[in-house]
Image 1 (cartoon, rainbow, N blue to C red):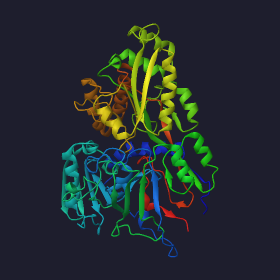
Image 2 (tube, rainbow, N blue to C red):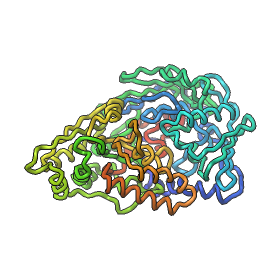
Image 3 (tube, rainbow, N blue to C red):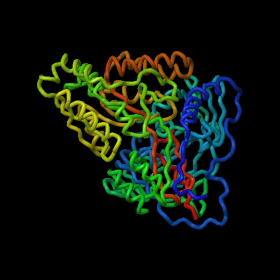
Image 4 (cartoon, helix red, strand yellow):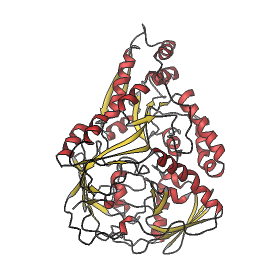
Length: 543
């Protein structure tokens, strides 16, 4: 099949159904049927390929716009490195967006019992860690227990776990505190990795890893343009076919126009985000294929609730009203859809009728009541956003123009993610712009990670501290598992408190992924459950 100028399109309805199935269906399945294997068969990695395929000596080059690695520890990693780590490490399951179900990975089958409070996973045989050690149930148990003990990043996903047992070398048994779709949890894009705990202390310098995935680290040069290269792990349980890519490079390219030129010149194979103009151009460019997929990734505009002028809730409310939501969406030309609250449509917790609208007159009134705007002294605010992200730059351009009408000067600075994040953790800005997406198809991570109080800021970069909100957030996992109506009600109330009463954040839109790839790359499928991840082992070069 020729992939020249082919548009790959995943329908919105399919994505919505996927999330609903993940968040609700998994719980019902665990509660309503007697124990039996939930999945059988093997993944695409083990399917027979044509014997006539020629060897692929090419390096697949991914062009991210930000630094790739912030943390090499598979237990605590919780940032951009998912695009690499998902190819180095594996979990018990992987979520399939097309079938809307978890599928086998390091586990080949699983059962649930005791109304979803007991889960038993059968492990794949013959799997080796990149350290050479064999994977067995005891090794998997130690990995998950270490992740839970580290209690960092997305470790909260294992919050329902009471005990883990390894009754034999191929069996992993979980006893839970409350019913949870653990097969979906185990497919998380963060903190679900199984790794060799005996070697994990050696991975932090990026010279080695402790995973089971198809690729292992070749070289890591922090701060270099080609920051990271991966090579095939020859003993990978999924095997290798000649046409698969055995070498991968991550070439950091902050400017999207530069990435586009490199793609056209054949120097890179994948650009994770194109602006509307370039996406339209790519659709008609020889040697390029494009992909458009709805996502669960939204843009958050976080306001500093702890200090400076934005400590005043009236200023934060004015900033929410100053954003030109409709103008931004019009300029994105299909690269996003308007957000309604914090939780994208399709996930449990989505609330309708929370769409925001620009209202400069109301914003001016609020600023005036706080002593700013109009004839008052000029208000200067600082904002940080991702270097090279054209969509965020568009938001900043529109917001800067709107605020100028209100005698507010926005001092916006594009930054590499590591630098922006470090400044954010030091409370060094008034407004912090970033994307958020769930760790697995569930809304909880928006609340636990971004808006729950934390004395030492990590990703809660509005610095919101509210005991009532914290208590409600802590109840969400159990409510979602045991009383879905109560969970929906709580999500609705929490979003109104965070967005309206506290005005800690504005949510302009939910992204639609717009990718561009070399036309000779076959097998690419965008999986919204793993944002921006390319599973390189699934790809092959057209002969």
